Length: 62
Image (cartoon, rainbow, N blue to C red; front, side):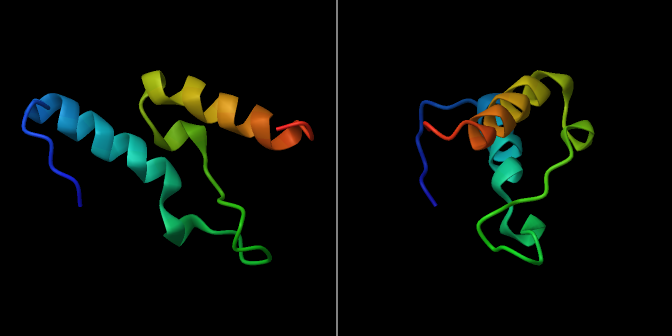
Protein backbone atom coordinates (compact mmCIF):
# COMPACT_ATOMS: atom_id res chain seq x y z
CA UNK A 1 0.00 0.00 0.00
CA UNK A 2 1.21 3.48 -0.87
CA UNK A 3 0.37 6.38 1.42
CA UNK A 4 0.66 9.93 0.19
CA UNK A 5 0.04 12.51 2.91
CA UNK A 6 -1.11 15.23 0.52
CA UNK A 7 -4.14 13.23 -0.63
CA UNK A 8 -7.32 14.25 1.17
CA UNK A 9 -9.69 11.67 2.58
CA UNK A 10 -12.12 12.26 -0.29
CA UNK A 11 -9.40 11.93 -2.90
CA UNK A 12 -8.16 8.77 -1.20
CA UNK A 13 -11.68 7.35 -1.22
CA UNK A 14 -12.00 8.20 -4.92
CA UNK A 15 -8.70 6.45 -5.68
CA UNK A 16 -9.81 3.41 -3.71
CA UNK A 17 -13.06 3.26 -5.67
CA UNK A 18 -11.16 3.67 -8.94
CA UNK A 19 -8.91 0.77 -7.96
CA UNK A 20 -12.02 -1.39 -7.52
CA UNK A 21 -12.30 -1.44 -11.31
CA UNK A 22 -9.22 -3.67 -11.28
CA UNK A 23 -10.50 -6.01 -8.55
CA UNK A 24 -8.93 -9.40 -9.29
CA UNK A 25 -11.95 -11.24 -7.90
CA UNK A 26 -13.74 -10.12 -11.10
CA UNK A 27 -11.49 -12.19 -13.34
CA UNK A 28 -13.11 -14.05 -16.19
CA UNK A 29 -13.34 -17.76 -15.39
CA UNK A 30 -11.93 -18.66 -18.83
CA UNK A 31 -9.10 -16.13 -18.91
CA UNK A 32 -7.42 -14.66 -15.85
CA UNK A 33 -6.23 -11.75 -18.02
CA UNK A 34 -9.77 -10.44 -18.49
CA UNK A 35 -11.85 -8.75 -15.81
CA UNK A 36 -15.62 -8.78 -16.01
CA UNK A 37 -16.63 -5.24 -15.08
CA UNK A 38 -20.16 -3.84 -15.22
CA UNK A 39 -19.94 -0.07 -15.51
CA UNK A 40 -23.34 0.23 -13.82
CA UNK A 41 -21.76 -1.02 -10.58
CA UNK A 42 -19.72 2.21 -10.38
CA UNK A 43 -20.55 5.88 -9.92
CA UNK A 44 -21.27 7.81 -13.11
CA UNK A 45 -17.93 9.64 -13.12
CA UNK A 46 -16.08 6.28 -13.33
CA UNK A 47 -18.26 4.86 -16.08
CA UNK A 48 -16.49 6.90 -18.77
CA UNK A 49 -13.13 5.52 -17.59
CA UNK A 50 -14.51 1.99 -17.79
CA UNK A 51 -15.84 2.61 -21.31
CA UNK A 52 -12.43 3.92 -22.40
CA UNK A 53 -10.74 0.83 -20.99
CA UNK A 54 -13.25 -1.40 -22.79
CA UNK A 55 -12.60 0.42 -26.10
CA UNK A 56 -8.85 0.02 -25.56
CA UNK A 57 -9.27 -3.73 -25.16
CA UNK A 58 -10.98 -3.88 -28.55
CA UNK A 59 -8.25 -1.85 -30.25
CA UNK A 60 -5.55 -4.20 -31.56
CA UNK A 61 -3.01 -1.37 -31.80
CA UNK A 62 -3.04 -0.76 -28.04
